[in-house]
Image (cartoon, rainbow, N blue to C red; front, top):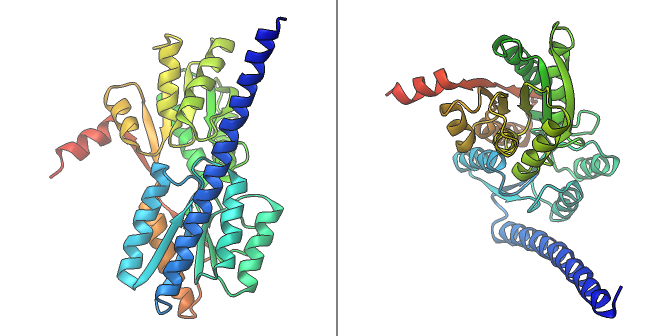
Length: 329
């Protein structure tokens, strides 16, 4: 290889290194800025209860809706919500945010559960310092969190299985996209789904892949899965961005014969259902999750007891439900 090619290659490697270093520093500075804002707001008015809400991903539509519900409840109760989260899904950053939040001594913390020993230790640290912790979206029942608020994820997966079996019309060879292999809520949904599929003759899960809560990755994984398993007839996505990504993967492989099922009610998912590209979606209640979490904390502040698990409902959104919602006054 010529000296010129070596030089170009080294420059390329250096630029890639600089890009990832910039992303790391940018994310770290963002976290420090968010925690600094939280600390300043607590100093400004110690009479107000300050609650930290740590999202899985700060600008994810699901988590922004959880934030909306939490802030609505906080406004009614005279509390303040400090909302923060990683720029992109990153459990290590979630843990760093939790650790820094504990150091800032808020009145309570609302956080997604993560199955990780360090995370459980941090939750214990908060509890030992008198900071109540409630988990949302994904539970961590083996930790010392006081309560979980969110979807019964195993039941939601089971409901998805029943929906697919009922509507698939013989399309029993299934490909599955989950948001994360590490997230407990995704694994529970998958297990609930499996409990129906494994007991239904003619239905089989051909492959399971992870999108890492990314629409682009959901599309790429769908394309790769269909290229490897051309016999797949139904695709199921278990995180909010998966169904839209699956649609894009189907377009890339020129597959219009695959039935698609998703999770949550993003605007693109609604459009896909309206256009017939998505058969249905299991819809959670993120606003209620945020709202109820804050009200449970209010009960804790008053010294009351609260349920360890508070499950919020799920609905099925399909073309009939969309038509009904449009026609209703």
